[in-house]
Every structure is written in structure tokens, then in C-alpha cells.
Length: 491
Image 1 (cartoon, helix red, strand yellow):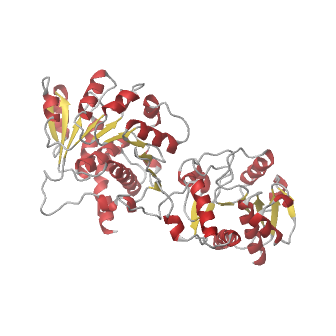
Image 2: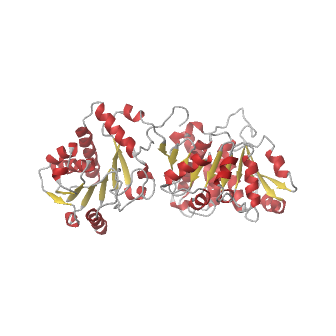
Image 3: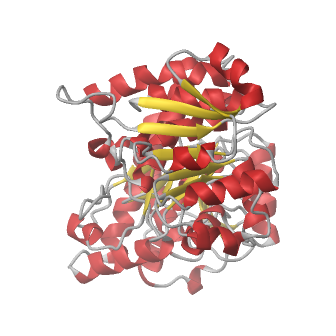
């Protein structure tokens, strides 16, 4: 993700890119019928690996996804499985490779209807792939509803029918226990609700040449250390606390816990020095609670300006516990005016409600914003899917946007984006977002690129929580970071 490095294994292909890859593979000499055969074989292989022979209904659609389904039906039947096939549409309307594989099916073909899954112990959903752009018809919905109501395990080909490949949105999909997709995942496999509807996702190699995949203009990835591990700041024997960066946070009052947790996270992830600048009235609270974190009281007008003019501070954070008021907005603008790396979180985002243009004009250097959906909507008048909204906000503002949630999206102004998938449910606890801000701040203070720092911070935040398990409190997270760092060093 830096320079020409593009980690291909974690790439997420859009529906259009997957279509382009199929077309290029065929153009390079791999017949489309062989790609379809390989796809169906892969699905059948995953089925036979998980289940012993039992009655199975294969639901086939009118396109290539349905063609994959006919291959599955043939392979399973040849292996002795009792197989029924139900088709949405008429067999005569099938075209190309799908028609070829349908002609190889010698059994009966029913209409897609709830009756088609009666007596089945397993269902294969080969109705519609990731390119679906319309709502499912009533008979398909009724059939998938019957599958869910009967508790039948469902294996999806490419995506569960009704999940949009580029967005993860659902228009009536039934949840699968397993989804077999091809070549690479798509955004719909990792964005919610698609991720939950897919169950376990298996990526199968169907014979698309690696050169074809490498030729694609990939700009979206599933977040993984392979994307940023080599850029993580490393402590050097010749270094000292000053060479490892100095993070400065603005501490709030009377809400003091958020900034304290953020500061500890920044220090834990490697910032050589961490300072919190606090109102004089709050100095005793912060100073009593913190040891290695320095506390700087703001006793008179001009104190903050003097801190900001000190070039030894290498990154700034404002927002946690700051308060939604004019003073917070003015301080945020002053910090942005330094053109040094800045992270805006929580209240420092909300103070720019309906002031998105003002905020964009104020950003002169590396900037990361970490809104949840509510804060995002206050600043950005953008609608649609999560990945698209995050990308548009990054482009408009010139900042790296970390749109938080169980499927956090990190988007850069140049269009690059990652989708994070390792965050466990126990991260849904007060203060965890403040810790995330501190982690990213600590990486920024050490000189890491803003987009990569955000991606790394989000992943390590999830990994730390996953390593703790149930009962997690936000204040536990900073102390879990060293174990994550050790793991990254040794893997």
C-alpha cells in the first residue's frame, strides 16, 4: 500500500473488477466453461468436506451463478448425493456457459418455490451472484424464507442471493452457513449486514491467472497487517524518547477519563513522550491519575498557542471530553493550523456540524477523523453505503476518515480504503473509541503515514479486545497493546 506495493491477498474486488477479471482470463485463453466448472467444483468440494451425503436442493438462477449451481448439482449427484434442482426462469432462456452446464444435468428441473426445499437437508443458493442490482422476486423470497424458517443449512455461491457485492446491503437474502466466492472477496463479504449473512467465507481459486488480478487497479482491501506491518514505527537502539515522537492531547473537563485513556494508548503504542494540556481547574485530577503521562495546565491566555508553536510536538489529538462548544472549535482550528498531524475525534468533530466546508478549508496537513455514524452525519451531508460515504467524506475534507462500527471503514482522500473485520462485539463499551484515537495518535506522533496509521490502529484495537474476551472495559485496552505489538513483531 506504499509506493507500488499492493498486497493482493487482502484485496477486495468490486463487482466490475471481478467481471473484468473473468473477461481477461477468458481472453487469455481460459474458457468460460472451465472457469464455471472450477467454480462449481469448489462449491461441491466445500460441501462434501463439511457434510456427508444427504438430500440437497440446488437453487439455480438464470445467469452464470445458476450455471455454477448446475455444476454443483452434477458433481454431487455423481458422488451419490440425492439432488433436486430448482430453476428461477426457463431453461430455454439460459445462455452461454450456463446453458452448456445445464444441458449436462440429466435430472428433473423444478420451479423455484418453497416446495422445492421440502425434504431437503441442505440447500445450495446459486440464484443470483454479487452483481444483483434489483430486489428479489416474490417466489425467490418465499423460497429463501422457507429455507430460513425450516433451519436448513444454506451454502451460497459467490454471495447469498440478495446481498449486494459492492456494499454488503441486503434485499432479502437468507443467511448462509458458508459462502464460496472466487479469486478474491468483494466488499459485500466484509461490510455489514453482508458479512453476517455470508457465514464462513471461502475464497476459491478457479484458474484466473495471477497476472490478470495484478493488472487490476485495486484500491480497497480487507484490513490486515500485511498492508502496513513494514511501516510500523520501530524502536532503534540509537534512538531516545525524543526521536520516538511527542504526542499532545487536549484534555477535557469535567469529562476527564476519555483523554486520559487516549493518552495511555498513545504511550503504549510507542510515542516517546505524551502530554495532556488541561484547564487549570482540572490539573489535580489529571496529575493524580497519571504518572508517565505529563500534564500541562493551561493557566492563562496564550498557553495553548505557546504549546502549539513548539515544534517538538509531533502530533495532536482533540475531542475526547472536550465539549461541544465554540472554544473546542476554535482550539481545533488552531491545532489544524499547525499543519502537523492531527486527530479529530468525538466533540471536535461534532463542533463542525453543518460546517464541513469550514473544516475542509482548515486542514493543511495530515489529518485523521474518527466519527461514528451520528458524528459523521452532523458534518457530512452524504448518503448511501458505508464505503461510499467514507470515501466521499475523505475526498471532500482532505482527511483520512475512520467511520467506526463493527465494520469500520478507513478511507483516504486519494480513494484508498480498508474495511476492518477483526473487531469483536465486546468493543461496544464506553470509551473504546477514545482508546482508538490514542492508538492512532501514537502512531502519527512517531511519523507513520496517516492512512496506514489509521488502518493499523483500528486493527490493533480489535486485536487487543479479541485477546481479552468478555468483560472488557475500555481502560483495559491500553495494557493489552504490548501483547499485540509483540505478536506483530514475531509473526
